[in-house]
Image (cartoon, rainbow, N blue to C red; front, side, top):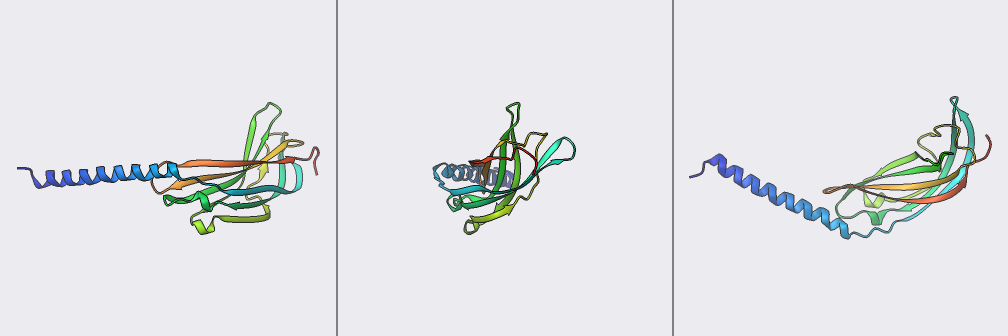
Length: 168
């Protein structure tokens, strides 16, 4: 006959296998979730563009964000990490990305965001003297953190115009 420890091991292994199968099935249900967020992101104001610490430049901007991310939440969503990113290309054609603001949304009811002339949380500092006159895109990125399953990200970019060609 089997010992008590062997029987306990069999029972725990069986329940562990059942839990793993249920977790996989749970994460697969998110594949059928169709999120349709409504987002508007605009550059509100370029307060200044100045030299910064020798060979770099800094832009001070504000932005308007009107986002309804409630449809992004599913029953498997634990929280959403969102951030606003500035995207621009350097002279060499390299894409530069700078995070300007972020937030964590833990409840579906708080996933409607309205910010007017909002200051950036982080400094907008270029890697060199490459900010003047650049085309600028602002991108809202949302990273879904599920209760079970893989993380996934999505984003929406908005062309907002050019940075000034000279220091202000």
